Image 1 (cartoon, helix red, strand yellow):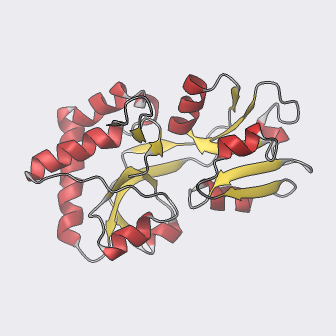
Image 2 (image 1 turned 120 degrees about the horizontal axis):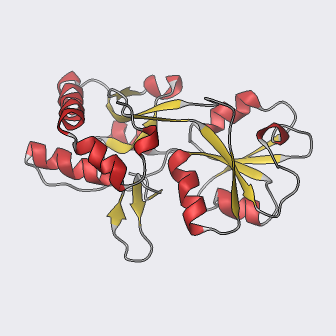
Length: 224
C-alpha cells in the first residue's frame, strides 16, 4: 500500500493510523482468509518490484489498470474508476481552466510511476512535464512555483481540498484520463487471483465495498 494515498491507503499524520477504502478491504480480505495481516509500504514506482520479489501478496491501493503494468502483474476485476484532474493554486493566474494546461511556458507535475506519468507524456504537446520522485512531492513543486499544476485523480484531489486552503481543482473534460482501478497480484498464481476476485464479488453483493466507499467519500467513483 502507498501511505500517501488519501481515502485509499492513507497514514493519517494526526495519529499515524492507516485509513481508507483499501485499508478496510485488506482487513476484510484477511478476515475472510483467516490469516494475519501485514501492511507493506511502497509506491507506484516500486510496487511491481515488491510483488515480483514476493515481499507482499497483493497491492491494494487503487492500482490503475494500465497496459504496461498488465505485462508484469495480474489485475483483479476493477472496482473503481476515476478521471484525471488538475490541481493548482487559488491565486495562480496561468492555469484557470483545463485548456490552459497544455500551453507553452506551463510546467505540469506528475508523480513518478503513477498513471498520470504516461498519460500526460502522451497528451502534452506544448507544456513541459515534470516527473516528481520521492521524497519530493507534487504539492511542494506547485507551491514553490517550479510547476504550475499537478495532475491527480478523484481521491487525491479531494484530499487537497480538505487539507490545503491554497489548492484549486481544475475539472477535466468528461472522461479525460479515466482509468479503471483494481488490485494487483504477481503473475503465475491463478488460484490466488480467483480468490481475490471472489472476495471482490462477495463484498459487492453484501454491501461491504459500498459501505467502505461511502465511509471514505468515494461513492462517486465506485463501479456498481
